[in-house]
Length: 247
Ligand code: NAP
Image (cartoon, rainbow, N blue to C red):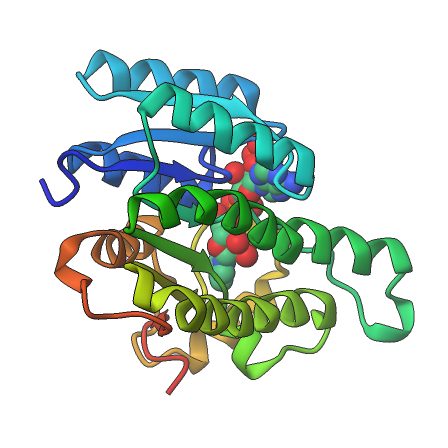
Protein backbone atom coordinates (compact mmCIF):
# COMPACT_ATOMS: atom_id res chain seq x y z
CA UNK A 1 0.00 0.00 0.00
CA UNK A 2 2.56 2.56 -1.15
CA UNK A 3 -0.01 5.28 -1.89
CA UNK A 4 -2.32 4.98 1.11
CA UNK A 5 -3.94 8.38 1.76
CA UNK A 6 -2.69 9.91 -1.51
CA UNK A 7 -4.97 11.57 -4.05
CA UNK A 8 -4.00 11.20 -7.70
CA UNK A 9 -5.03 12.74 -11.02
CA UNK A 10 -4.09 10.73 -14.13
CA UNK A 11 -4.71 11.86 -17.71
CA UNK A 12 -5.76 9.26 -20.31
CA UNK A 13 -6.57 6.45 -17.87
CA UNK A 14 -9.01 4.33 -19.87
CA UNK A 15 -6.50 2.46 -22.06
CA UNK A 16 -2.93 1.19 -22.23
CA UNK A 17 -0.32 2.54 -19.82
CA UNK A 18 -2.79 5.00 -18.25
CA UNK A 19 -5.22 2.21 -17.39
CA UNK A 20 -2.40 0.20 -15.79
CA UNK A 21 -1.43 3.27 -13.72
CA UNK A 22 -5.04 3.68 -12.54
CA UNK A 23 -5.20 -0.02 -11.53
CA UNK A 24 -1.80 0.05 -9.80
CA UNK A 25 -2.53 3.28 -7.91
CA UNK A 26 -5.94 1.99 -6.75
CA UNK A 27 -4.36 -1.31 -5.63
CA UNK A 28 -1.86 0.70 -3.56
CA UNK A 29 -4.56 2.65 -1.73
CA UNK A 30 -4.68 5.91 -3.71
CA UNK A 31 -7.92 7.74 -4.46
CA UNK A 32 -7.92 8.36 -8.20
CA UNK A 33 -9.50 10.69 -10.72
CA UNK A 34 -8.60 9.80 -14.31
CA UNK A 35 -9.55 11.44 -17.58
CA UNK A 36 -10.57 10.08 -20.97
CA UNK A 37 -11.48 11.81 -24.20
CA UNK A 38 -13.00 9.13 -26.47
CA UNK A 39 -13.12 5.87 -24.43
CA UNK A 40 -16.33 6.58 -22.50
CA UNK A 41 -17.53 2.94 -22.16
CA UNK A 42 -14.11 1.67 -21.07
CA UNK A 43 -13.76 4.53 -18.57
CA UNK A 44 -17.12 3.74 -16.96
CA UNK A 45 -16.28 -0.02 -16.81
CA UNK A 46 -12.92 0.64 -15.09
CA UNK A 47 -14.56 3.05 -12.67
CA UNK A 48 -17.27 0.58 -11.60
CA UNK A 49 -14.92 -2.44 -11.44
CA UNK A 50 -12.46 -0.67 -9.13
CA UNK A 51 -15.16 0.94 -7.00
CA UNK A 52 -16.77 -2.51 -6.57
CA UNK A 53 -13.42 -3.69 -5.18
CA UNK A 54 -13.53 -0.94 -2.54
CA UNK A 55 -11.33 1.68 -4.23
CA UNK A 56 -12.34 5.30 -4.89
CA UNK A 57 -11.93 5.92 -8.62
CA UNK A 58 -13.71 8.57 -10.72
CA UNK A 59 -13.54 9.08 -14.50
CA UNK A 60 -13.96 12.56 -16.00
CA UNK A 61 -14.20 13.42 -19.69
CA UNK A 62 -11.68 16.12 -20.63
CA UNK A 63 -9.46 16.97 -23.57
CA UNK A 64 -5.95 17.23 -22.11
CA UNK A 65 -4.91 19.61 -24.89
CA UNK A 66 -7.53 22.15 -23.81
CA UNK A 67 -6.41 24.72 -21.24
CA UNK A 68 -10.00 25.38 -20.11
CA UNK A 69 -10.91 21.65 -19.83
CA UNK A 70 -7.75 21.01 -17.79
CA UNK A 71 -8.49 23.86 -15.39
CA UNK A 72 -12.05 22.55 -14.85
CA UNK A 73 -10.77 18.98 -14.34
CA UNK A 74 -8.21 20.04 -11.73
CA UNK A 75 -10.85 22.08 -9.85
CA UNK A 76 -13.31 19.18 -10.01
CA UNK A 77 -10.65 16.71 -8.78
CA UNK A 78 -9.86 18.93 -5.78
CA UNK A 79 -13.59 19.17 -5.04
CA UNK A 80 -14.04 15.37 -5.30
CA UNK A 81 -10.88 14.21 -3.50
CA UNK A 82 -10.08 17.21 -1.29
CA UNK A 83 -6.70 17.78 -2.98
CA UNK A 84 -4.09 16.36 -5.38
CA UNK A 85 -0.84 14.75 -4.16
CA UNK A 86 0.17 13.07 -7.43
CA UNK A 87 -0.32 14.24 -11.01
CA UNK A 88 0.46 11.83 -13.87
CA UNK A 89 0.56 13.43 -17.31
CA UNK A 90 0.06 10.28 -19.39
CA UNK A 91 -2.27 11.26 -22.28
CA UNK A 92 -0.55 11.05 -25.64
CA UNK A 93 -1.03 10.34 -29.35
CA UNK A 94 1.02 9.61 -32.46
CA UNK A 95 0.44 10.95 -35.99
CA UNK A 96 3.48 9.44 -37.71
CA UNK A 97 4.78 10.60 -41.09
CA UNK A 98 8.08 11.44 -42.73
CA UNK A 99 8.75 15.17 -42.45
CA UNK A 100 8.16 16.01 -46.11
CA UNK A 101 4.73 14.34 -45.93
CA UNK A 102 3.84 15.59 -42.45
CA UNK A 103 0.92 18.01 -42.45
CA UNK A 104 0.66 21.09 -40.29
CA UNK A 105 -2.38 19.44 -38.68
CA UNK A 106 -0.36 16.31 -37.74
CA UNK A 107 2.29 18.52 -36.15
CA UNK A 108 -0.23 20.65 -34.24
CA UNK A 109 -2.36 17.72 -33.02
CA UNK A 110 0.61 15.91 -31.52
CA UNK A 111 2.13 18.99 -29.88
CA UNK A 112 -1.27 19.94 -28.44
CA UNK A 113 -2.16 16.51 -27.02
CA UNK A 114 1.34 15.53 -25.84
CA UNK A 115 3.12 18.74 -24.76
CA UNK A 116 0.55 21.48 -24.23
CA UNK A 117 -1.41 19.00 -22.08
CA UNK A 118 1.56 18.70 -19.72
CA UNK A 119 1.76 22.49 -19.39
CA UNK A 120 -2.02 22.70 -18.84
CA UNK A 121 -2.27 20.14 -16.05
CA UNK A 122 1.01 21.01 -14.36
CA UNK A 123 0.18 24.71 -14.24
CA UNK A 124 -3.30 24.24 -12.77
CA UNK A 125 -2.21 21.54 -10.31
CA UNK A 126 0.98 23.31 -9.21
CA UNK A 127 -1.02 26.25 -7.80
CA UNK A 128 -2.70 23.82 -5.44
CA UNK A 129 0.46 21.80 -4.65
CA UNK A 130 2.32 25.03 -3.80
CA UNK A 131 -0.32 25.84 -1.18
CA UNK A 132 -0.03 22.36 0.39
CA UNK A 133 3.81 22.46 0.02
CA UNK A 134 4.01 18.91 -1.37
CA UNK A 135 3.31 16.90 -4.51
CA UNK A 136 4.77 14.58 -7.11
CA UNK A 137 4.33 15.22 -10.84
CA UNK A 138 5.20 12.43 -13.28
CA UNK A 139 5.28 13.03 -17.03
CA UNK A 140 5.23 10.28 -19.66
CA UNK A 141 7.95 11.04 -22.18
CA UNK A 142 9.56 8.39 -24.44
CA UNK A 143 13.02 7.18 -25.33
CA UNK A 144 12.13 8.62 -28.76
CA UNK A 145 12.29 12.05 -27.09
CA UNK A 146 15.97 11.39 -26.31
CA UNK A 147 17.07 9.43 -29.39
CA UNK A 148 14.72 10.69 -32.15
CA UNK A 149 12.99 8.44 -34.67
CA UNK A 150 12.49 8.76 -38.44
CA UNK A 151 8.79 9.29 -39.14
CA UNK A 152 8.12 10.70 -35.69
CA UNK A 153 9.58 14.23 -35.74
CA UNK A 154 6.36 15.63 -34.23
CA UNK A 155 6.14 12.96 -31.51
CA UNK A 156 9.88 13.09 -30.72
CA UNK A 157 9.76 16.90 -30.47
CA UNK A 158 6.78 16.73 -28.09
CA UNK A 159 8.51 14.13 -25.92
CA UNK A 160 11.84 16.01 -25.90
CA UNK A 161 9.86 19.10 -24.88
CA UNK A 162 8.45 17.16 -21.93
CA UNK A 163 11.98 16.38 -20.72
CA UNK A 164 12.99 20.06 -20.76
CA UNK A 165 9.72 20.99 -19.09
CA UNK A 166 10.17 18.32 -16.37
CA UNK A 167 13.68 19.50 -15.47
CA UNK A 168 12.56 23.16 -15.40
CA UNK A 169 9.62 22.43 -13.10
CA UNK A 170 11.87 20.37 -10.80
CA UNK A 171 14.16 23.42 -10.57
CA UNK A 172 11.31 25.92 -10.00
CA UNK A 173 9.47 23.92 -7.34
CA UNK A 174 12.10 21.73 -5.66
CA UNK A 175 12.48 24.09 -2.69
CA UNK A 176 8.67 24.10 -2.23
CA UNK A 177 8.34 20.34 -1.68
CA UNK A 178 7.11 19.53 -5.19
CA UNK A 179 8.96 16.90 -7.23
CA UNK A 180 8.73 16.50 -11.01
CA UNK A 181 10.11 13.50 -12.89
CA UNK A 182 9.62 11.80 -16.25
CA UNK A 183 9.26 8.17 -17.27
CA UNK A 184 10.63 7.22 -20.69
CA UNK A 185 9.07 3.96 -21.87
CA UNK A 186 10.66 2.10 -24.77
CA UNK A 187 8.49 -0.28 -26.79
CA UNK A 188 5.38 -1.16 -24.77
CA UNK A 189 2.50 -3.43 -25.89
CA UNK A 190 -0.52 -1.07 -26.15
CA UNK A 191 -2.85 0.22 -28.90
CA UNK A 192 -0.16 2.82 -29.72
CA UNK A 193 2.36 0.19 -30.87
CA UNK A 194 -0.04 -2.47 -32.18
CA UNK A 195 -0.55 -0.58 -35.45
CA UNK A 196 3.18 -0.59 -36.33
CA UNK A 197 3.98 -2.84 -39.33
CA UNK A 198 5.20 -6.32 -38.29
CA UNK A 199 8.63 -5.76 -39.85
CA UNK A 200 9.09 -2.49 -37.93
CA UNK A 201 8.11 -4.27 -34.69
CA UNK A 202 10.64 -7.05 -35.39
CA UNK A 203 13.40 -4.51 -36.17
CA UNK A 204 12.79 -2.81 -32.81
CA UNK A 205 12.66 -6.12 -30.92
CA UNK A 206 16.03 -7.12 -32.39
CA UNK A 207 17.60 -4.00 -30.84
CA UNK A 208 16.16 -4.52 -27.33
CA UNK A 209 18.64 -6.33 -25.04
CA UNK A 210 15.73 -8.05 -23.24
CA UNK A 211 14.29 -9.16 -26.63
CA UNK A 212 10.67 -8.41 -25.79
CA UNK A 213 8.18 -5.57 -25.58
CA UNK A 214 7.43 -4.14 -22.15
CA UNK A 215 4.00 -4.31 -20.53
CA UNK A 216 1.86 -1.40 -19.40
CA UNK A 217 2.06 -2.79 -15.84
CA UNK A 218 5.88 -2.64 -15.90
CA UNK A 219 5.67 1.07 -16.75
CA UNK A 220 2.98 1.61 -14.09
CA UNK A 221 5.29 0.15 -11.43
CA UNK A 222 7.95 2.74 -12.24
CA UNK A 223 5.31 5.50 -12.05
CA UNK A 224 4.23 4.06 -8.67
CA UNK A 225 7.81 4.38 -7.38
CA UNK A 226 8.04 8.05 -8.43
CA UNK A 227 4.58 8.77 -6.98
CA UNK A 228 5.38 7.17 -3.63
CA UNK A 229 7.50 8.36 -0.72
CA UNK A 230 10.13 5.76 -1.69
CA UNK A 231 11.43 8.40 -4.12
CA UNK A 232 11.25 11.51 -1.88
CA UNK A 233 14.78 12.69 -2.78
CA UNK A 234 14.40 12.15 -6.54
CA UNK A 235 13.42 15.06 -8.80
CA UNK A 236 14.25 16.31 -12.29
CA UNK A 237 15.09 12.80 -13.51
CA UNK A 238 14.13 10.74 -16.55
CA UNK A 239 13.70 7.04 -15.75
CA UNK A 240 13.80 4.75 -18.81
CA UNK A 241 11.60 1.65 -18.77
CA UNK A 242 12.78 0.06 -22.00
CA UNK A 243 14.39 -3.36 -21.52
CA UNK A 244 17.81 -1.74 -22.04
CA UNK A 245 17.01 -0.16 -25.44
CA UNK A 246 18.21 3.26 -24.25
CA UNK A 247 21.73 2.73 -22.89
P1 NAP B 1 -2.61 4.42 -26.01
O1 NAP B 1 -2.85 3.00 -25.65
O2 NAP B 1 -2.75 4.87 -27.41
O3 NAP B 1 -3.56 5.33 -25.06
C1 NAP B 1 -3.50 6.72 -25.17
C2 NAP B 1 -4.28 7.32 -24.02
O4 NAP B 1 -4.18 8.76 -24.11
C3 NAP B 1 -5.75 6.97 -24.07
O5 NAP B 1 -6.19 6.74 -22.75
C4 NAP B 1 -6.40 8.25 -24.63
O6 NAP B 1 -7.72 8.48 -24.17
C5 NAP B 1 -5.48 9.30 -24.04
N1 NAP B 1 -5.55 10.55 -24.79
C6 NAP B 1 -5.09 10.81 -26.04
N2 NAP B 1 -5.34 12.09 -26.37
C7 NAP B 1 -5.97 12.65 -25.31
C8 NAP B 1 -6.48 13.93 -25.02
N3 NAP B 1 -6.40 14.92 -25.93
N4 NAP B 1 -7.07 14.15 -23.82
C9 NAP B 1 -7.16 13.16 -22.91
N5 NAP B 1 -6.70 11.91 -23.11
C10 NAP B 1 -6.11 11.67 -24.30
O7 NAP B 1 -1.14 4.89 -25.57
P2 NAP B 1 -0.14 4.27 -24.48
O8 NAP B 1 0.78 3.37 -25.18
O9 NAP B 1 -0.87 3.80 -23.31
O10 NAP B 1 0.70 5.60 -24.13
C11 NAP B 1 0.54 6.30 -22.91
C12 NAP B 1 1.65 7.33 -22.80
O11 NAP B 1 2.92 6.66 -22.83
C13 NAP B 1 1.67 8.32 -23.97
O12 NAP B 1 2.05 9.59 -23.51
C14 NAP B 1 2.73 7.74 -24.88
O13 NAP B 1 3.30 8.72 -25.71
C15 NAP B 1 3.71 7.19 -23.87
N6 NAP B 1 4.58 6.16 -24.44
C16 NAP B 1 4.09 4.98 -24.92
C17 NAP B 1 4.96 4.04 -25.47
C18 NAP B 1 4.51 2.71 -26.01
O14 NAP B 1 5.35 1.97 -26.53
N7 NAP B 1 3.24 2.35 -25.92
C19 NAP B 1 6.33 4.32 -25.52
C20 NAP B 1 6.79 5.53 -25.02
C21 NAP B 1 5.91 6.44 -24.48
P3 NAP B 1 -9.03 7.89 -24.96
O15 NAP B 1 -8.87 6.39 -24.96
O16 NAP B 1 -10.18 8.38 -24.14
O17 NAP B 1 -8.98 8.47 -26.35
